[in-house]
Length: 487
RNA sequence: GGCGUCAUGGUGUAACUGGUUAACACGCCGCCCUCUCAAGGCGGAGAGUUCGGGUUCGAUCCCCGAUGACGCUACCA
Image 1 (cartoon, rainbow, N blue to C red):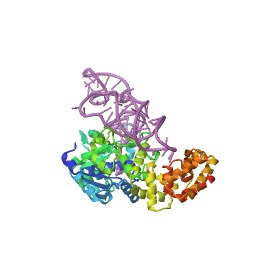
Image 2 (image 1 turned 180 degrees about the horizontal axis):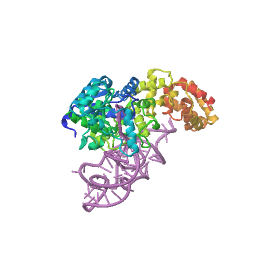
Image 3 (image 1 turned 45 degrees about the vertical axis):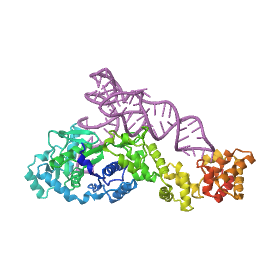
């Protein structure tokens, strides 16, 4: 279990493989590591596991960094690239070879594949048969010295079991007989994942390894190496996976899988981080209010304070878009208009919208609109009329409130009434409208609803008179007078 | 197939070392408020804790089995 020493100043890492963008599962793993490090005042390291040269690319690294920056995860050391640390892996491999924990294997990839196929066909487990393990070590060394190609395999003890105390799952144990003599170094001298993680985690002084539960089966192979190197084990903490709505592993089929895609969908970073943190983790009693109700909207400081490995769930979690949207509305509301403005501007840019008006006007509009925004997209979509004269009328809204030609005429008429008025305040605008309604013998609500659509293009908006003030008399008059031409 | 992990309403989670009318949040439904829609307030439906055994005075919780889901099963990570 976790010792006091190891949790005092932990060193943890996020070690993505740049073979794709930062996906939600990876982002959560990164978040948990970051939260853990910050909680204890430890160190968070970023390491790029790019030993698969075929599939790794610098572009993917950039994408991963962009994703991390977006959700606000900063790292203290790195990024370190495994492709630049090959000497370390070679040296570690040499130690393992020298101590008799590893041996050269001359089987070719084709041979192995063929044997595997045969084994599966015969109903036997497709495990490496260990034939090169029987070779004389000095002879093997001589063959390699002469330039023969060979991979280096770890010699797994034939008997016994390998166990560790997982911070999430408790004691986990695998029979050694179930493990095969896995490859440490490929025949081209490039390390496999199994070797490089151990060598790096050791070299970088990792105290905790917090990663996805898909690594549970790899862990005994790593534990064996720690033991062979007489090195102390880090604390392993395996985090359950995130599934799609159909409870299968999250994939493109379920929609967005890259973190940046959520940014593009108008999700605000705090919302995404908040949502992710609560997927497979709960703060327990610490997260409840005085009445015993669970609070869920947490900023990063609070998440850091609350986070602990003990709160990590044991079962996989389903990604729920509705809940993400809820967090998004909560956070958009919680932002100050000043903080929201740059995000809104980015959205305008993405939507090709260049709004008129001053910064002050934009801030005032945001303050009024943020209470009913579900996404940043709203600011370029249904809120478009607040920032530009180039907006469209929502068809359903027009049908609902402006289908009566008489009402449209009255609204145009009322527009002229406003134009002629000397005063234009919220109170005067409302008084004018209500007096006009009474005079014409129609219900004020009819004019209010109709005017709203005429002015904003939407059936949904903040209080009409506040909107009028926000947009200013000139624009209001113009749009109301144009009411007759809508339909 | 083998090995491993997990299993509480539709979803995320709670339920002190076995004793609760199984709680909270999202979503859903209704009502109130009201110029619309959100928000907010109030209320409701929805799980007897995957199933079957066992231990116990008493199991969501402990044990066994089954089932299901997921993971791993590469000279990928």
